[in-house]
Structure formats: C-alpha cells, structure tokens
Image (cartoon, rainbow, N blue to C red; front, side):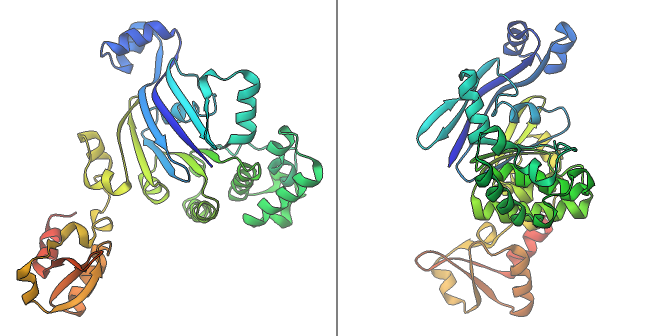
Length: 343
C-alpha cells in the first residue's frame, strides 16, 4: 500500500518568484492576478492521505482542488513544497524525481480517473482498460487476465470487445474505474469522476466505488464540488477556498464544527441530525443514574435518529454502553433539546 503527503505546496501558473513574493506578503489570489497577471493555483497547502483512506478535496470551482490533486502524479509542478508518496517504506518525492522514476510512479504507484472519462474512442472496452498495463509493459496474456478480472468487477465483462464509444456515459465511467484498478496501483486520483453523470447513475457508481474500496483499500484522493458526495465518499474532507485548505476533518467534524464562516455557509444545508450520536448528547454516568431503570441500552455510536425511535417505543432513560460498563445516559429532555438546536 502507499500513503500521500502534501507538505506546504504552492503551485503558480506563470513567473513563480514574483507571485510567491506577493503571496508571502499576504496578497490574495485575485490581487496577485490583478498586479501581475500570474495565477496562484494553490498556496501553502498541507494534507496527508493515509494508506487505505479516502480524502475528498472539496470546494467551489476555481478553489484549487484539481491543481492540488495533480501535484500527486506530477501533472502540476509545485513552486514550493513537497509531494511524497510512501510505498513499502520507500519515499518518492514526486516533484524531484528524474523523468524515468516519475514514469515508473505514474505506471505503477498512481492511477487517475478523469471527469470526462479520458477514454480512447477508437479502442475497444478491453483495450481501454488495458492501456495502463500496455504502457507498463505487461505481457499480453497477463494483461488480458487482469483486464477481464476488472471488467467482471464493474459488470462489463460481456462488453470487452465492443468499441467504447458505443457505451453510455455511466458504462464509460465504469471502464475508467476498471482501467484505474487494472494496474494494481495503490494510489488512485479521482478528479470529479461522476459529476458529468445523471444523479441516479452517479449514486450507483458511488456505491460501486465504495464496494471496490472496501475490498481493495486503495489510497484515494477524490475531487468533488458536491458536499453530499464528499460526505458519502470521504473518510476525511479537505475544504478549499481561494487556493488554500481552510479545514480538514471527518465529515462529522466539518458539518458540526465548521472552522470559518465560509465552511459554515458551505455546510448550512446539511441536516446535522445525520451526524449526531448517543455519545454527542449523553450525560456522563454517575451515581444519580443508578437510580433509573433503563428502558434500553445503546452503543455510543448509535445515531440520534435511532434514539428518537427508541424514545417513542420505550419511554424512559436510555443507557449508553462504554468499553467497561455504562458510559452515560440520555433523558428524553436531552433529545428534545438537541432537536431544538438542530436544523
């Protein structure tokens, strides 16, 4: 497996030193562009994607998500900072690799799925899936076996020899997924892979990717401008604004504890009820609680929605189990208070 470390990375499209001098003196992207005509893609961004983790880069259009993503495979070159892939205990600093080593990283460590599929329309489904294997020099028999394995995973084995141009958008993106998984690369970059698809197809492909990730535990950096998608897909979310990462955390941390007005505005339409659990609203267990007879005992991670149903079905005090006994308890009044404070 592999992990990704992005350390204090800045990307400039134009004369790097001039733009960085302005950025270091507190000028915004808009001010730098107005004064110099130079675009500051991202500035001083740091992010870690642990092995087997999915981190979603989230933000408005133009916030720097795709630019930061592309530093991981060297498509965007940092003016400052480092991007390091750690694979089997060995570090690969992407922005200082020799061309032949960068080629190896791109063919063995990192795969990418694009928003517009990035398929070759004159090739068959199987030949598109096998493109990365072909570039890596994989033998034909082995490549065919790997191709068919991946097509079976995404339900397209019967379409192997059909021209990819004859497939629907959703099926073409399945081909893109199969191609990304075929090389066995441990790091997967996904640049808004489902945004061009209809909502129902997008939901189905999200489900399929979650199933594949549960099985293969890739290290995924995923770009999205859809907060619902980011919450569903990400172990962590890194929210970007004007080329900066303004908050990184779990979906629950982002929604319940926004770090700025911008983040709060971003998550304002998300129902916080979906994130609250028994642990968030319980009272610490104490001697007073022993006087109560519990209507039910729940785990700390039990969703608030489940607690509401329990309170209706079994009126009374709800106990919350800990590792060595009861950790706390919940009164109906506690649930009502949280409902009153939650949109």
